[in-house]
Length: 398
Image 1: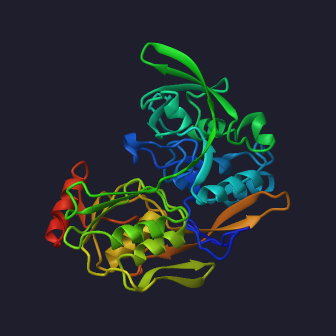
Image 2: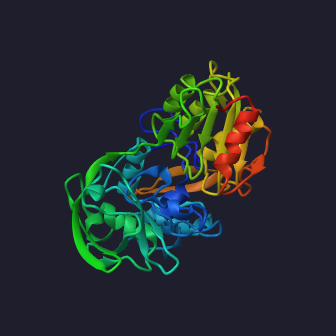
């Protein structure tokens, strides 16, 4: 069982004392309506955030919290009762199997078909992205395809999380037995324009690529680092990218749509830009804790950070820490605003309940929960161009 969970949660991992920062409510229900626009969210895989958006806003509880007491179709049992009684909108109930899946996903691996979904205003589940090299890509699925049904169960009007659960085999009768592994089949009914067809895909073991680095302007230009989520190893990937970045070009750190993840990884990422010092503080039932960057980062390289309404949890922690420490100019739109600490608690039936026990704060003392991070420069569609201009003014850029 893990320990306290921030935002996510600072939580202790089964493998040791690693703190994690996980946006639990996003895992359960998806992101806030409208914040991710057309980008969608991973439907059958990790993204610690990531499973497609149900359209839940700040005032909505995670999916499990809304079930009547005693109704436990997914085996979340006692945890579901605890969450229902809590009145805590960020609380989450996991069945034992769901929690095991969740822990594996924090490692960046999952079994699925490689689809991202979004919910259209009319309730349709639309493909927003297809993972290259995945079973879905091999079958020729494309963004915009209408996923009408999964294993014979209609998708339209259902919360996207339910559609996601069926893609992964985590809903219906399949959820009562062992989790379906790589090679198990799932049948999709699809529509594209006037074409209607049925496709049976075989799930595969996939690994998320949550850090993508490039230099679109050449070797002396800005190093662009896009971070989708903070799973195991993400922080060190960012550190390596920063170490090889051109001091002249600087770093454009893109945290738009970042859905959180492991807090240790966010702190490691902050260490790439800081030579030690405070990253954040948090409390667990009144007990104050602090997170510090490691020494040895690059405190001089110019940095601009891109954020938006889909930047959550660990993404907010990193952006806010760099902003407060004067290490980056933050560009974009206000972030989601989820900075609460959840504590996981094992129940007698093996299910896990997570309830809010505290909040985390930036180095300046400001809270993120309900407030988010306000960029230094507000920009929407032109945010990348504005960030590059800012970076050039900081001494970076081609």
